[in-house]
Length: 315
Image (cartoon, rainbow, N blue to C red; front, side, top):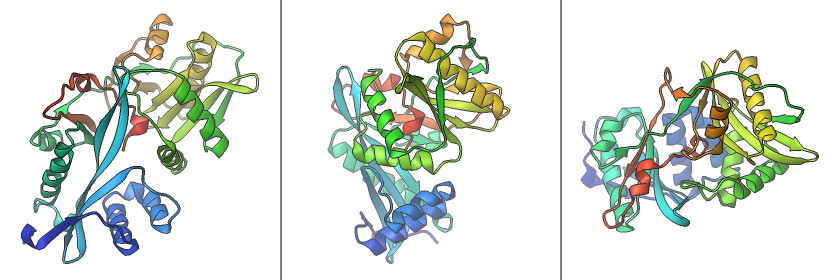
């Protein structure tokens, strides 16, 4: 039976019982994130800048859409942007218009602030009907091939300690200034570390220069390849070579023959690989959620049409 939305209420849960019910519902809809939501329920973690708009029917949460606020660097300034996340409807309430009802509500909230909004989805036609446009993320792939031996040590990390996370924070803030770079504050970094440590597919590498870290890479193991999600280093070639060789060695160790690169348009690694005669091709053979943007009414947002969003920042 369809839901009578006139008998429903959209509100942001605040008390512990409501939040527990919401996180329980999200863990049901997103089973791969169950551990994270269980940690949140237990009070161990919080979700970064995440405001849920939950539809209640007779005090039961029957759907949710959240807004996640970000700040991006663009054209030498910071731009606020609203991310759409945790679009969730339990299976027993699907097909009743719950998600569209909530999206219409949330988009009014975003439009009142004249903000662009972004999302990842496997249902682009649904969101195109709400004014979202597809933005190609320019993911490329290349074969696993090392670039010759260099005498530069690389430290492999399968778990981020507090000290390791602080090192990444410092390198991220000091290297690579580009349009679309996300401002990561302390709350964000806590979530970043928690998410990475809750994943058995994510690894990091530190390139060492004496007792200091000169660069880092982050990858994720996929079925037939590794996905390079972050690569932050100086333009110094030995650092780039050492990190790239580690990526290829990690892939080969797992029996992977491809590296996919999800990096910004002007990232220095593209040029480095071309100089070293590594052919780059459009990614194929893997299905990813697509990235979509929705423009505000009163502001020029042409830069969004070329926005490259780091998949490590996927929300």
